[in-house]
Image (cartoon, rainbow, N blue to C red; front, side, top):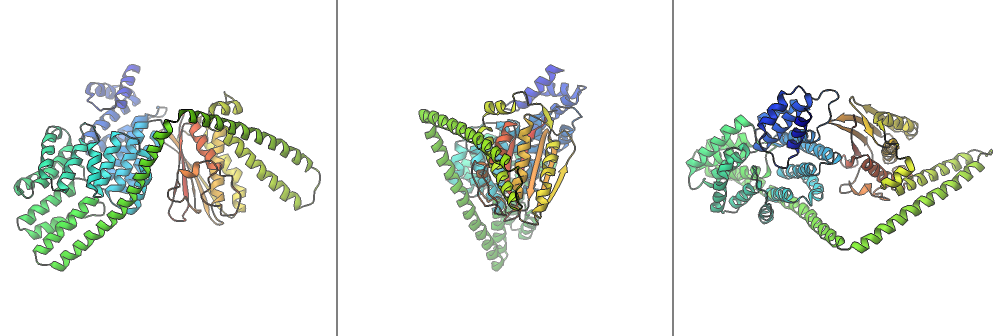
Amino acid sequence: MERLLEAGFAALRAPQQERHDDLVRDLRNADDSVARRLAAAIDLRRYVTLGHTRLCEELLPQLTAAEPGDPPLEVATWLSDNVRGILSDDGKDPEEALIWFDRAAMYAASAGLTREEQISRQNVVRTATRFGRADLIKTAAVYFGRIARGGTGTHEALGEIFENLGDWDAALWHYDNSERIDINAVPALGRARVYLATGKSDDATEILAQLEPVAADDIRTRSNTYVLAAIASLKTDPERSRSLALEVLGFLDSHGFGLDVPDAKLTLAECELLDGRIDSALDILDHVDGPHMLLRDRMRCLDVRAKALWTVGEPEEALAEHAKLRGVWGDLDEMRSLLWETYRDLIRANRAEAEVAKLGPINKELREASETMHVTAAQTGHDLRSGLGVIKLAMSVPLEEPMRRIARSALDQMNDIVEQVQWASTIEDSGRLNQRLGKHDTESFDFAEVVREAVEQHRLQVEQKGQELHLAIGDGSLTVRGHRILAVQIANNLIENAMHYTPEGGTITVELVEEYGSVILDVTDSGVGVPDGDEERIFRAFVRVRQPTSGESSTGLGLYIVRSSVQQLGGQVTARGRGDEQGSIFRVCLPTRR
């Protein structure tokens, strides 16, 4: 059984998915729940690559049905979330797709699955740009930097982005620089779409002819190839175009990929228009239009509808459709400008990184200077703490109120600052951290207990500020391995951060759940929110993008300590705003230890 499971894990982690029929059969027939989940995961990975959507939906419950005590299947868990995103992205619900892709990326990062994290982030970008909505485009811009050095897969994603935004030269450049040759044929299909959009039908037809052998086994590639061939044949061979479009709709109906359906139906509408059946064409257009159409499909729909209306002698309605089309192009220009600005920043950052890599001796000096800074900060913290101890001892004699309360409050505040400085000086150095906390203090602990203690510790202070504090803890294993005090730092600093930036009457919600082998801690507030573009910057040392709402002082180290503590525990922390002045959500994802 052990060898069988090892072979299953190896097949699941393989860079290219091949057929493993014998292995899958043995895993499925084994009297072991982990083996059966591995079999479902291997099949799921192959089916989503081939485009068998219905089979993917059937396999998902088998993959997630773990028994108590089963170890988490890291790649399988990432795969499950990513497939849920693909199924939601398939012309159904882009917002839900973004949630699943983002969750998959976070889990992959916490589990150390670098390639899988990159794939999920590319899918976030694809989803955001496909539907051409301004709010999703902003999300895509944020994720640009995270897929900067993704190699071939990044070129594919960026090619799709610029294609959807109508920047044909940029799209073609990225597709040409993607050397990936596999069953998806993503770059080849992208080039064919760009050639069709720029009037190079012969070049597109040549590419599609080369893809026909691959399309025989791959449903998704077949649908794309046939749809593009139908579009290429519209003017020269309308009957072939109609036949291909109907064939696509036939096998898509049995396999379920919805993103290609509008393309095929729009091609049918154009065939009807060429044959003079205007009413039939308009009827098809009425049924294909929807809120979740891809941006390029919506533009094509408006263009075909305008032609049909003009043909039947309704020029005003036709001009109205063209006005909508011009509006879409105006939105495209704004979105394209935003993404190009981010892309240029990305290129500059990569060039700067290349230059820094050449400066080895200077980097060594910088590391030595950083080490000196850490030592100095630690020594300063020790000296300040000693002085504070003397002052507190002197204050133990009777003093008049309220001066005593004011003095003690000031001292407590100074003590907190010193504590944060000391943590900041040691938190990212594992050796120094183990020396401070004890090398053997890394046993498993209950994260739920840590969170409860942190909430109760701050409840009185929250009530004094006129705020509400809610706690919700889910079922499942909430055990984490590592230094328990790091988890204490995470919970305390996140709650204190929420208190500082939430006004009187606001609400702070702390939620802790176990999902797919990870402990997820969400701290949500109704405060001023994280400004767009500062989601990563706020975790740097001494950074404060906004002043606390109550005028309290801040060292700018709290979130830096949170991120460093999370990384020491093998996890990831993210932050995002909930809209203008609607608060923030801080999410910590830590791997569980059963």
